[in-house]
Length: 261
Image 1 (cartoon, helix red, strand yellow):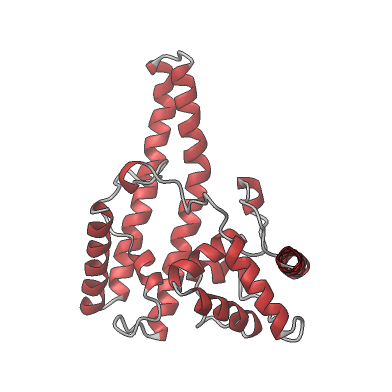
Image 2 (cartoon, helix red, strand yellow):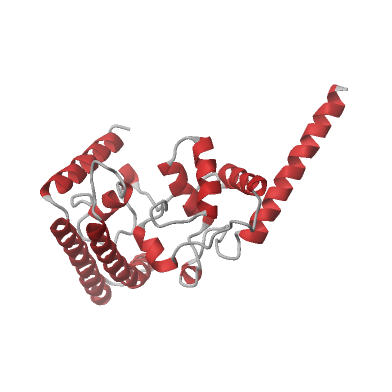
Protein backbone atom coordinates (compact mmCIF):
# COMPACT_ATOMS: atom_id res chain seq x y z
CA UNK A 1 0.00 0.00 0.00
CA UNK A 2 2.84 2.40 0.88
CA UNK A 3 4.52 1.66 -2.45
CA UNK A 4 1.26 2.30 -4.29
CA UNK A 5 0.76 5.62 -2.49
CA UNK A 6 4.36 6.62 -3.17
CA UNK A 7 4.02 5.81 -6.87
CA UNK A 8 0.73 7.69 -7.05
CA UNK A 9 2.26 10.78 -5.44
CA UNK A 10 5.32 10.60 -7.67
CA UNK A 11 3.20 10.26 -10.78
CA UNK A 12 1.02 13.19 -9.73
CA UNK A 13 4.10 15.34 -9.10
CA UNK A 14 5.51 14.50 -12.51
CA UNK A 15 2.18 15.35 -14.15
CA UNK A 16 2.07 18.74 -12.42
CA UNK A 17 5.70 19.45 -13.36
CA UNK A 18 5.06 18.46 -16.97
CA UNK A 19 1.90 20.57 -17.13
CA UNK A 20 3.63 23.61 -15.63
CA UNK A 21 6.58 23.23 -17.99
CA UNK A 22 4.21 23.09 -20.95
CA UNK A 23 2.40 26.22 -19.76
CA UNK A 24 5.71 28.05 -19.53
CA UNK A 25 6.72 26.81 -22.97
CA UNK A 26 3.45 27.93 -24.54
CA UNK A 27 3.11 31.28 -22.80
CA UNK A 28 6.58 32.52 -21.80
CA UNK A 29 9.20 31.33 -24.28
CA UNK A 30 7.92 33.45 -27.17
CA UNK A 31 9.52 36.44 -25.41
CA UNK A 32 11.73 35.14 -22.58
CA UNK A 33 14.74 32.97 -23.38
CA UNK A 34 15.04 30.01 -21.03
CA UNK A 35 18.79 29.65 -21.58
CA UNK A 36 21.71 32.05 -21.34
CA UNK A 37 21.73 34.17 -24.52
CA UNK A 38 24.79 34.47 -26.72
CA UNK A 39 26.18 37.90 -27.58
CA UNK A 40 24.44 37.71 -30.96
CA UNK A 41 21.08 36.71 -29.42
CA UNK A 42 21.14 39.61 -26.95
CA UNK A 43 20.60 42.13 -29.73
CA UNK A 44 17.31 40.54 -30.84
CA UNK A 45 15.80 39.64 -27.46
CA UNK A 46 12.16 40.61 -26.94
CA UNK A 47 12.40 40.45 -23.14
CA UNK A 48 15.02 39.72 -20.46
CA UNK A 49 16.10 36.05 -20.16
CA UNK A 50 14.10 34.12 -17.58
CA UNK A 51 17.15 33.23 -15.49
CA UNK A 52 17.94 36.93 -15.08
CA UNK A 53 14.33 37.80 -14.28
CA UNK A 54 14.13 35.16 -11.57
CA UNK A 55 17.55 36.08 -10.18
CA UNK A 56 16.40 39.67 -9.64
CA UNK A 57 13.07 38.51 -8.22
CA UNK A 58 14.72 36.28 -5.63
CA UNK A 59 17.20 39.03 -4.77
CA UNK A 60 14.35 41.51 -4.27
CA UNK A 61 11.79 39.24 -2.58
CA UNK A 62 13.42 36.76 -0.22
CA UNK A 63 10.26 34.98 0.91
CA UNK A 64 9.36 32.12 -1.45
CA UNK A 65 5.59 32.42 -1.19
CA UNK A 66 5.67 36.20 -1.58
CA UNK A 67 7.84 35.81 -4.66
CA UNK A 68 5.39 33.36 -6.21
CA UNK A 69 2.46 35.61 -5.32
CA UNK A 70 4.28 38.51 -6.97
CA UNK A 71 4.60 36.55 -10.22
CA UNK A 72 0.89 35.70 -10.24
CA UNK A 73 -0.07 39.30 -9.49
CA UNK A 74 2.41 41.01 -11.78
CA UNK A 75 1.79 38.98 -14.94
CA UNK A 76 -1.91 39.77 -14.64
CA UNK A 77 -1.42 43.47 -13.92
CA UNK A 78 2.08 44.55 -15.00
CA UNK A 79 2.91 48.16 -14.17
CA UNK A 80 6.06 50.26 -14.20
CA UNK A 81 5.71 50.88 -10.47
CA UNK A 82 5.62 47.18 -9.58
CA UNK A 83 8.41 46.10 -11.95
CA UNK A 84 11.54 44.75 -10.27
CA UNK A 85 13.79 44.99 -13.31
CA UNK A 86 16.14 47.92 -13.84
CA UNK A 87 14.58 51.02 -15.45
CA UNK A 88 16.72 50.57 -18.57
CA UNK A 89 15.09 47.17 -19.15
CA UNK A 90 11.67 48.79 -19.24
CA UNK A 91 13.01 51.45 -21.57
CA UNK A 92 14.31 48.78 -23.90
CA UNK A 93 11.62 46.11 -23.75
CA UNK A 94 8.60 47.97 -22.39
CA UNK A 95 6.13 46.34 -20.00
CA UNK A 96 5.11 42.76 -20.65
CA UNK A 97 1.55 42.22 -21.95
CA UNK A 98 -0.98 41.20 -19.31
CA UNK A 99 -1.71 37.48 -19.04
CA UNK A 100 -5.06 38.17 -17.40
CA UNK A 101 -7.67 35.98 -19.04
CA UNK A 102 -5.00 34.04 -20.93
CA UNK A 103 -4.23 31.74 -18.00
CA UNK A 104 -6.37 30.90 -15.00
CA UNK A 105 -5.29 31.74 -11.46
CA UNK A 106 -4.50 28.06 -10.87
CA UNK A 107 -2.39 27.88 -14.03
CA UNK A 108 -0.50 31.01 -13.07
CA UNK A 109 0.29 29.52 -9.67
CA UNK A 110 1.68 26.44 -11.42
CA UNK A 111 3.78 28.64 -13.68
CA UNK A 112 5.05 30.64 -10.68
CA UNK A 113 5.96 27.44 -8.83
CA UNK A 114 7.78 26.01 -11.84
CA UNK A 115 9.74 29.20 -12.49
CA UNK A 116 10.70 29.59 -8.83
CA UNK A 117 11.90 26.00 -8.55
CA UNK A 118 13.85 25.94 -11.82
CA UNK A 119 15.23 29.46 -12.36
CA UNK A 120 17.87 30.60 -12.19
CA UNK A 121 19.46 27.17 -12.81
CA UNK A 122 21.99 25.72 -10.40
CA UNK A 123 25.42 27.25 -10.88
CA UNK A 124 24.03 30.46 -12.41
CA UNK A 125 26.20 33.50 -11.81
CA UNK A 126 24.90 37.00 -12.36
CA UNK A 127 27.82 38.61 -14.15
CA UNK A 128 31.35 37.26 -14.20
CA UNK A 129 33.12 37.59 -10.91
CA UNK A 130 36.81 37.40 -10.18
CA UNK A 131 38.75 37.35 -6.94
CA UNK A 132 37.18 39.26 -4.07
CA UNK A 133 34.13 40.02 -6.16
CA UNK A 134 35.96 42.21 -8.72
CA UNK A 135 34.38 42.04 -12.13
CA UNK A 136 36.40 40.40 -14.89
CA UNK A 137 36.89 42.16 -18.21
CA UNK A 138 35.79 45.48 -16.78
CA UNK A 139 35.55 48.25 -19.39
CA UNK A 140 36.72 50.84 -16.84
CA UNK A 141 40.22 52.01 -15.97
CA UNK A 142 39.18 52.57 -12.34
CA UNK A 143 37.50 49.67 -10.54
CA UNK A 144 36.13 49.38 -7.04
CA UNK A 145 36.80 53.04 -6.22
CA UNK A 146 33.88 54.93 -7.72
CA UNK A 147 30.24 54.25 -6.85
CA UNK A 148 27.73 52.79 -9.29
CA UNK A 149 25.06 55.22 -8.21
CA UNK A 150 22.38 54.21 -10.70
CA UNK A 151 22.58 50.59 -9.46
CA UNK A 152 21.95 51.78 -5.93
CA UNK A 153 19.15 54.01 -7.18
CA UNK A 154 17.53 51.04 -8.92
CA UNK A 155 17.66 48.92 -5.76
CA UNK A 156 15.97 51.70 -3.83
CA UNK A 157 13.67 52.96 -6.59
CA UNK A 158 10.56 52.92 -4.42
CA UNK A 159 12.28 53.13 -1.04
CA UNK A 160 10.39 55.77 1.02
CA UNK A 161 13.66 56.64 2.78
CA UNK A 162 15.16 57.73 -0.53
CA UNK A 163 11.98 59.49 -1.61
CA UNK A 164 12.55 59.85 -5.34
CA UNK A 165 10.05 62.12 -7.08
CA UNK A 166 8.52 61.24 -10.45
CA UNK A 167 10.51 64.04 -12.06
CA UNK A 168 13.73 62.64 -10.60
CA UNK A 169 12.86 59.14 -11.79
CA UNK A 170 12.34 60.31 -15.36
CA UNK A 171 15.70 62.08 -15.38
CA UNK A 172 17.49 59.11 -13.78
CA UNK A 173 16.04 56.73 -16.38
CA UNK A 174 17.44 58.92 -19.15
CA UNK A 175 20.88 59.04 -17.50
CA UNK A 176 20.92 55.27 -17.06
CA UNK A 177 19.75 54.70 -20.63
CA UNK A 178 22.42 56.96 -22.15
CA UNK A 179 25.12 55.37 -19.98
CA UNK A 180 24.20 51.78 -20.84
CA UNK A 181 23.98 52.51 -24.57
CA UNK A 182 27.48 53.97 -24.50
CA UNK A 183 29.02 51.23 -22.32
CA UNK A 184 27.36 48.43 -24.30
CA UNK A 185 28.76 49.84 -27.53
CA UNK A 186 32.26 50.16 -26.05
CA UNK A 187 32.18 46.64 -24.58
CA UNK A 188 31.55 45.17 -28.03
CA UNK A 189 35.01 46.39 -29.03
CA UNK A 190 36.81 46.20 -25.68
CA UNK A 191 36.14 42.57 -24.75
CA UNK A 192 37.15 41.00 -28.11
CA UNK A 193 40.22 43.25 -28.22
CA UNK A 194 41.30 42.09 -24.75
CA UNK A 195 41.00 38.46 -25.82
CA UNK A 196 42.87 39.15 -29.04
CA UNK A 197 45.76 40.82 -27.22
CA UNK A 198 45.95 38.00 -24.65
CA UNK A 199 45.86 35.33 -27.37
CA UNK A 200 48.54 36.99 -29.49
CA UNK A 201 50.73 37.58 -26.42
CA UNK A 202 50.68 33.86 -25.58
CA UNK A 203 51.28 33.02 -29.25
CA UNK A 204 54.55 34.93 -29.15
CA UNK A 205 53.67 38.26 -30.72
CA UNK A 206 56.13 41.06 -29.86
CA UNK A 207 55.24 43.98 -27.56
CA UNK A 208 56.10 46.40 -30.38
CA UNK A 209 53.46 44.88 -32.65
CA UNK A 210 50.87 44.67 -29.88
CA UNK A 211 51.37 48.27 -28.78
CA UNK A 212 48.92 49.57 -31.40
CA UNK A 213 46.16 47.35 -30.05
CA UNK A 214 47.05 48.13 -26.44
CA UNK A 215 46.88 51.86 -27.19
CA UNK A 216 43.47 51.35 -28.79
CA UNK A 217 42.29 49.37 -25.75
CA UNK A 218 43.52 52.15 -23.48
CA UNK A 219 41.58 54.74 -25.47
CA UNK A 220 38.38 52.70 -25.33
CA UNK A 221 38.69 52.11 -21.58
CA UNK A 222 39.37 55.79 -21.01
CA UNK A 223 36.17 56.59 -22.92
CA UNK A 224 34.23 54.06 -20.83
CA UNK A 225 35.65 55.55 -17.64
CA UNK A 226 34.59 59.03 -18.72
CA UNK A 227 31.11 57.67 -19.41
CA UNK A 228 31.04 56.34 -15.84
CA UNK A 229 32.28 59.66 -14.46
CA UNK A 230 29.65 61.53 -16.47
CA UNK A 231 26.95 59.17 -15.18
CA UNK A 232 27.99 59.84 -11.58
CA UNK A 233 28.07 63.60 -12.22
CA UNK A 234 24.63 63.69 -13.82
CA UNK A 235 23.11 61.42 -11.16
CA UNK A 236 24.48 63.59 -8.36
CA UNK A 237 22.94 66.65 -9.99
CA UNK A 238 19.51 64.97 -9.97
CA UNK A 239 19.64 63.83 -6.33
CA UNK A 240 19.59 66.16 -3.36
CA UNK A 241 22.32 66.04 -0.70
CA UNK A 242 20.29 63.87 1.66
CA UNK A 243 19.47 61.31 -1.04
CA UNK A 244 23.07 61.15 -2.20
CA UNK A 245 24.40 60.70 1.34
CA UNK A 246 21.91 57.86 1.94
CA UNK A 247 22.94 55.99 -1.23
CA UNK A 248 26.66 56.35 -0.53
CA UNK A 249 26.14 55.08 3.02
CA UNK A 250 24.21 52.08 1.69
CA UNK A 251 26.93 51.25 -0.83
CA UNK A 252 29.63 51.59 1.81
CA UNK A 253 27.80 49.10 4.03
CA UNK A 254 27.37 46.68 1.11
CA UNK A 255 31.07 46.77 0.28
CA UNK A 256 31.98 46.26 3.92
CA UNK A 257 29.61 43.31 4.15
CA UNK A 258 31.11 41.68 1.02
CA UNK A 259 34.66 42.14 2.30
CA UNK A 260 33.74 40.46 5.59
CA UNK A 261 32.37 37.32 3.89
